[in-house]
Length: 121
Image (cartoon, rainbow, N blue to C red; front, side, top):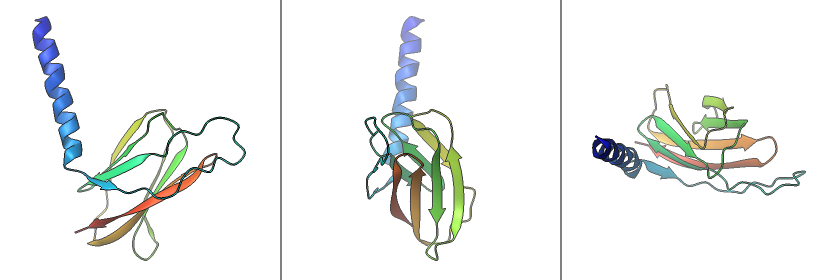
């Protein structure tokens, strides 16, 4: 019975990690500036998109992160605030994506902002 639990855990971990292989990594430009902070800054998050699923990964949990997705005209098509202390955030973008280039902006009150762009085909 113990071996079945371990095997099930390995299978589950393999499925979760293999889903990330099919996602498109969103290159994040910029860096946290941390003006006014006296502590070490966490590493900027990494983001990926798979169809309409946006995933944001942190090395350490960040609370109060504002997430914006903007279209080519600069209009916000999705926005949320990550207010929990999780190190991985996944959401389904409930929007009808029109093919084109979109901007992802991640903004934090203490660390500044970083962003990147991705293309929907």
